[in-house]
Amino acid sequence: MRPQSMNRDWIATARTLSEALPYLQRYTGAVVVVKFGGNAMGDEQAMADFARDIVLMRQVGMNPVLVHGGGPMINDLLGKLGIKSEFVRGKRVTDQATVEVVEMVLSGLVNKRIVQAINDQGGRAVGISGKDDDMMVCEPDDPELGFVGRPVEMNVQVLRDLYNAGIIPVVAPVATGQNDNETFNVNGDTAAGAIAGALKADRLLLLTDVAGVKNKAGEIVTQMSPDEVRAMIADGTIAGGMIPKAETALAALEDGVRAVVILDGRVPNACLLELFTDHGAGSLIRSTEPRMKPRSR
Image (cartoon, rainbow, N blue to C red; front, side, top):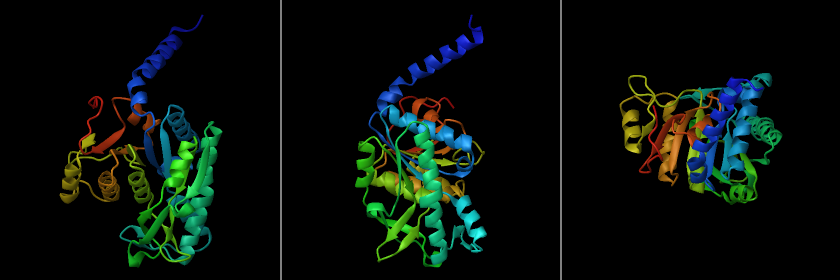
């Protein structure tokens, strides 16, 4: 005879699946761009769990597009090669030697690790970079930073071709320049926002190592309008490393993304919690679109 506790677990699982039905219907065919990075990239189990969530999103009819970072891995290889990193206003100065390492790490080691993790969970993933098919064309973001790029031209048909074929694109944020033989390092959040805007994505999920956007009292703000985000930046409530993410969210909304969520990638199944439950998993930024139900927190 099965233990009573096991029966309760199964009942809870069935109830959760049933309650998720409206959300599954809501997101059928939706394009969801996910920026992945942080601590989960260095943990094999966290990577496997994340990959399983992405495969599930694809399995229920969504079109996930994954964009990743890889700063810690870049730092590690630069250190081994004796290439010193310099930073200006928190951004890495990227000279010719550094950008070659960046491309090697992001388009090679990191990208293929994520592709393999998704394939191991039964998905079909293909890794590309912003240079493939001239998907992302950049100009220098700041002369002081060297080969750090700002996207100025997006050609995302290759991504549509992939997800229309049932394949999950995994994109390394390395881009081509407007001049011959230029390679640019692009901030992962910036790249994800540009891709989401070009695809007119339904959702852009920015996974971070914090719980979301906090107000002055230190509480997570679960829903915000663009005007509220701008006000929080202006008065210093949104500060430090959260500013680029908030600015990426605002730019993506202006480009036609329906909503952006800044959420805690350390939370197990964060993407599924955000998309398929009332509770959500972070800070939702949207213009006019209401949620199906108010958040419970």
